[in-house]
Image 1 (cartoon, helix red, strand yellow):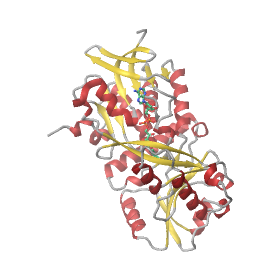
Image 2 (image 1 turned 60 degrees about the vertical axis):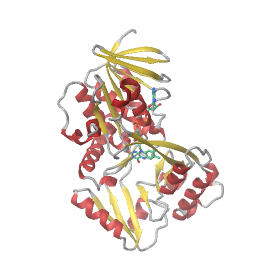
Image 3 (image 1 turned 90 degrees about the vertical axis):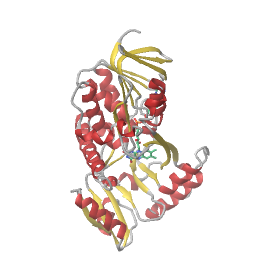
Image 4 (image 1 turned 180 degrees about the vertical axis):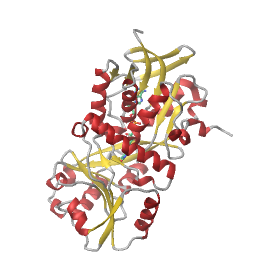
Length: 380
Ligand SMILES: Cc1cc2nc3c(=O)[nH]c(=O)nc-3n(C[C@H](O)[C@H](O)[C@H](O)COP(=O)(O)OP(=O)(O)OC[C@H]3O[C@@H](n4cnc5c(N)ncnc54)[C@H](O)[C@@H]3O)c2cc1C
């Protein structure tokens, strides 16, 4: 083992990359170890809607996510918005006519002080040129929401991490982690790695990695479910180039879309339900065709045949902590071991990276993270 790093970070998704960046900008030497390409896990298969808008049911979690949205503003200013594909001008939700559900959302968001404005059909068409919306469309635009190209952000962070003298090792699978009073030893296919402490940010593999480091009792403090989701990317389309917001149109399927790489990136509740009930089935073409048909209803100019066949799709695995919210902090009963895992990991990564990096370097525990410690899963 040539060198002892201060922290070994397993692995290089958006959470691990932001955590490593938070550490190196504070002067620590770290190593990021990923079994594949950094940003190639769930981070490579995400809508990457940066928002607190969808978290209004839980005020503490809403606040955490609102801080996450603010942290992205800072990170984009530092890395360059263009370099990480950061942008958008909010998220638009609408119904055709009155909607009790949207009214309830507005009440909740107003109580939290969330920034939003009312939109009508004309305003929606201005934000999404080419769209067809009913004249009676009414809704709201959550103005602070943004998007990012998450793998590009990971690539930009990795360049900074390497430039600071720390290491990012790809194709390096962590097979086992040994912790003792003096430090940590990680066995990988690239040899042994020595570190003072280990931070596990393995997305869907986090609980398994904690178990391999510290056994099943420690892993019980990091209970994570895996929830697949279907993402569909169209080829480049003129209408997508003009789209400035995330769109959440009315409809039972829960379709949502944003601009991505010159085309639309789409997901839907119905598509997620399909891959959830048939996780092993690799042919999602029926769900893709249904999503494309809905997009064509919104954008009649897309009606040219063959669009569904020209789309790329991917199933991403969400890591969802058992109670739905973030887990971040030292793993009880396991010296030198930290875990950071969450759904909404894109929204929260820069914030969690900063807060957890500071704590790893000895800062007092952040009050923002108090509700999200692994200790809440202690058996009573
Ligand atoms: C369809 C879909 C839509 C989503 N939409 C949004 C959204 O709009 N907004 C939002 O905020 N979030 C969204 N999410 C969630 C978000 O994408 C994730 O929370 C986030 O990408 C998780 O990042 P991560 O770094 O924790 O995990 P990952 O990106 O999965 O990274 C974990 C890494 O661990 C590596 N790894 C695993 N085991 C090992 C090992 N033994 N050794 C070494 N490396 C290992 C993997 O290779 C991987 O790169 C969405 C997710 C999905 C699936």
